[in-house]
Each structure stands twice: as structure tokens, then as C-alpha cells.
Image (cartoon, rainbow, N blue to C red):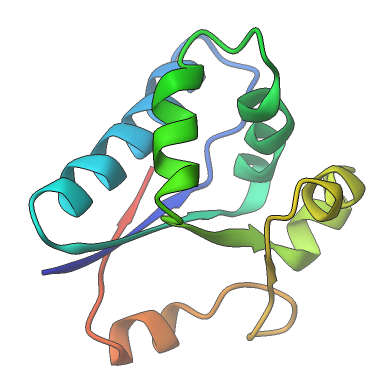
Length: 119
């Protein structure tokens, strides 16, 4: 099983934290069950990277487990710039992905056999 989870949810709404945490949780579950999981931060979802890295992030242990297992494939190059977090992403060592006009390629994921889930 190969699953790519694309987090596009921003940080401003009440349910935003729930979607971000579930993106981490689902990524971890797929990986722990023996599947291949990749989390991609895209659109307003790129805003989560600085929050995830914040030592006060309430689900920091979950984030670090996903990060340290190298399950975060990257952040959208274009969107990280558009949302003002590109410097933070680069400084944090997260790859910038931009195969399709500066954005992650959905077609490439599907061709590589990934089931795509967007939150």
C-alpha cells in the first residue's frame, strides 16, 4: 500500500488543528502498518511547518515521530513562497517540491502507485 497525504488545510479555522494532526496520524499509521506513506504540505498547509517545528506545538511528539521517520516528502515550493514560509521550510531542512509549475505533481504520485488523500 502506498499513500500520499496532501495537507492543504490552513491554520486559521477551529478544525484546522484536527486536520493537521490527522494528516500526521494517518501518515504514521500507514507507515507503522508496513505501507509506504508520504506527507506533502501544499497550499495553506505549508503554514503548518513552522507550527509543527515550534517546541510548544501540542502534538510535537507525533510530528517529530513522522519527521524523524522521514515520512514528510516536502512542501510545495510555490505555495511556501506565496504563504511566506519558504525561508522557514528551507532553514528547517524540509525539501521543496515543485515538479508541476512549482507545485507537487499529482500525476507523478498516481503514476508511482500512490493513493492520494487530501486534507
